[in-house]
Length: 296
Image (tube, rainbow, N blue to C red; front, side):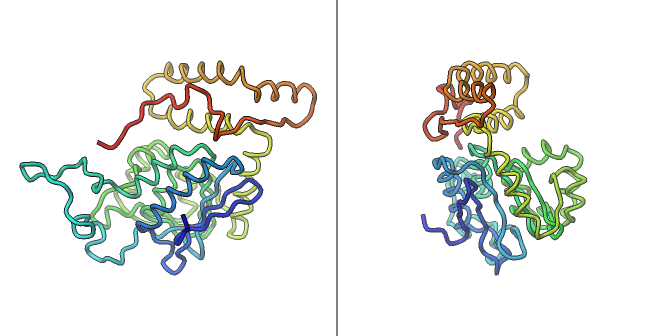
């Protein structure tokens, strides 16, 4: 796919995805939705990509949904044509046309097998902030601003943020930001645990790249992929026994792998490990261990 609204650049095993509509503050539209999903599909298949950074072109990260359609911006029937109806005339909510586009992006990021870092260079509101919630680490420039502005637009949080946000910042902080819909500075985001670090604008991408290199330098790609999914998936588990089941499968399957033998021997021989197992072809046979939840 040739990208119109994002840039896709790989260097030193780090993929940088840049939201690239700077004249619109990188406002999110249907094309960007499709391109982001494709980019994460492509990254998961590329063993040369060991970590991903997402940032914005120009002075904004993402100003939220593109509002150029005016009052009909969020009216699916007006923009795409009527969705399916049941016999009694009620909406058939299983119609894929009903699905939230931002949620399709965050669910794809959630399934990603590579570490994902948000490098927030400027304003990030609406989908501009909710898309970040499925990313692992968020670093912000001092120029960044955040806003869960849905209540001020008469809509509700999207992009599965009602699942992600309370788990990241706690229910009270999530509700305060979403009730008010106000835009707040990077330091407040840091105090509320939405982001992990605030840096000067010129330090943003170097800081993100240094972290990405640390993730990739001495680690086994398959282990990192499994760790990412284990941590995210266990956030929804109802008992630690669920974690024990997955841990046990992982220790058994990986314990017999060439990677683990190399990891142990290289440590004993005091040399850098050379991990050969690939995410594209060598994920263990128990993966994925969770049931797929299709949109129905």
